[in-house]
Image 1 (spheres, rainbow, N blue to C red):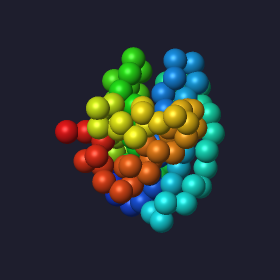
Image 2: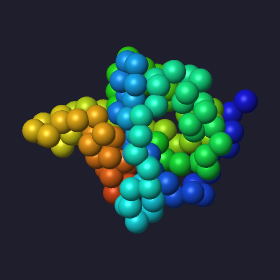
Image 3: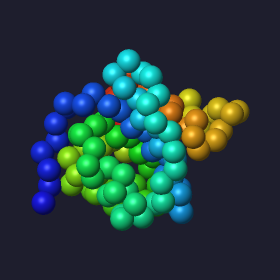
Image 4: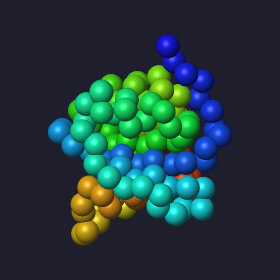
Length: 119
């Protein structure tokens, strides 16, 4: 059953999806990093991580796993944005590419203006 998406927590989460492991970064409304870590890219692990959290805005990268991850996060009540790589050149043209930094940049873009992430 799909939970109601609420805008109560004000938290923003960026997730850099990987085939086996994904990196995530949680920001508060002021842009402070509250949490950074890795999570297995499995339904079970993502459900455990996001299932009991208050509804948040979660931004994920487009990729192999993004369709099912987006559905799962929405079922858990999170506002989920799948970032179009054409709109996030900041990440992909960066010389300092790493998964944790990508997750944080996705979260920061979603915090400032989600329209920067998709058409």
